[in-house]
Amino acid sequence: MKKAIGVLLLSGILASCGSNPSKSISEDDSITTSTMTNKEIVGTFLGAVLTGDTTTMHQLANADYIQHNPFIPTGLAPFIGMLPVLQEHGTTAENIRMFQDGQYVFMHNIWRNAAPFGAEEMVSFDIIRLDEGGKVAEHWDAMTPVVKETASGRTQTDGPTTVEDLDKTETNKALAVALIEDVLMGKNPGNITQYISAEQYDQHNPGIKDGLTGIVAAVEIPYLAKQHV
Image (cartoon, rainbow, N blue to C red; front, side):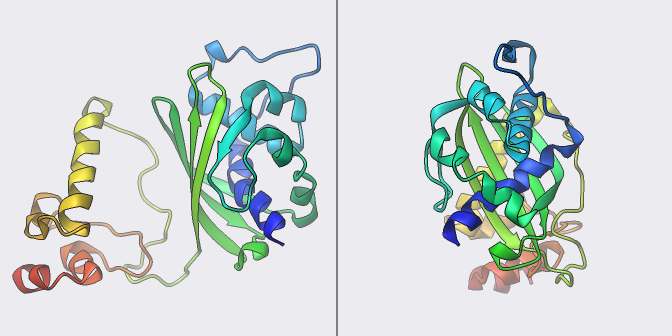
């Protein structure tokens, strides 16, 4: 069952390529990744996994690609050996978001018919790193069951799906890191209002309410509760 779970754990991002048709290649062809974006490379690779197109998989992934899912072995060959499990369970997924930042492509997906994971519907985040040659080199993921009734009334996947203000990427990444360090890790929790608006803060964690008061209550920092609730 662990192997079944492991393969299906990646199948969410496999099916996420449904809106980006994968390019299949024959033994005599090759994919020219120099003209493809990293998102297109990842979409093509994962589409090939879903359809069992091992030729394309060999073209786009390193033989020793690194796998961080604990149920999927590192390396392309052992992963290919597990592909038949995909057909047995019929697990599919809808891609909600797919972004790229340099060599990394990250995705947000809803999985369906995902009972092998412990729930019929699951939400996943997946990160794939491409190497300098444009080949799939590393994969991370995290998943959680879909919750129908959330504390905020929002779903786990609604909200913006497009990127704006790309010129502010580095500034925004630094802001996010500072939020984690100062507030969630307790370095300077009193600085929470420097990161989170008291007027509008939309929350997609199913157990946390919207707004500043919601996140303060969730992180359970007495100082924050006293100063801001």
